[in-house]
Length: 223
Image (cartoon, one colour):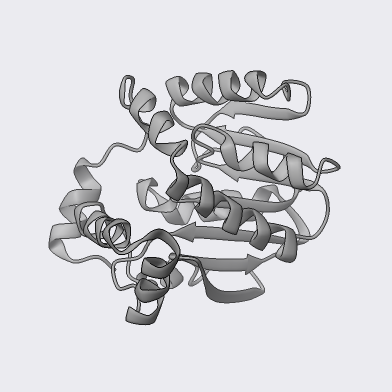
C-alpha cells in the first residue's frame, strides 16, 4: 500500500509523540491554520455523527474536543492518545478551558483501546492514522468499541491530494501555507487516497464512503 520510501518513513516514524515535541506541537496547534482546520472537522462531525458518545483517537492537545463541546455541549466526549506527555498536555488545556468534568482523556494505543465494546456512537481521528503502526488491528478496535450503527470518521492528509483541493486550501489558508502542507505530505508517511481506503478491506464494516473536509481526506466507516 505504501512505496518503499514511505514504508521506511513509517518504520522509523514514532507513534507516540515524545516530550518536548509535544510542547512544540501544542504551540503549533494554536495557530490559525490548525484552528480553522479544527473548525472544519467539528462542523463535519456534527453533520455526520449519530448519537452523543464520541471518541477521538490521537486526540493530541485536545482542541478538537474543546471545540466540539462548545458547539454541542450535550455530547459525551472522550479522547485517547498513546503519548503520555501529550495526554498530560491535553488535560492541561481542557482544565484551562474549565472542562475537566466534561471531557475525559485517557492514555492508550489505537491498537488496544482501553474501552468496553459497544461504548461509542462515533469514533473520529484527525491526522493520526498515518502514525498507527498496525492500522488493521486499530480499525478492528474501532469496530469493537462502536455500537451497531455507529460510524468512524478518519481524517488525514494524503500524498495525492487533488489539484482542486489544493487550490481550495490556498484560497482558505493562503498559498504559502498550502505549499507547506503539500511539502509536509511528502516528509511524513501519509497514505494515498486508495491506500487509506484499502485499510478497511476485509473488515466487517457495512458501509464506507470518502470525501474531503478542507484539505483533509476523510474515510467514513459504518458498523
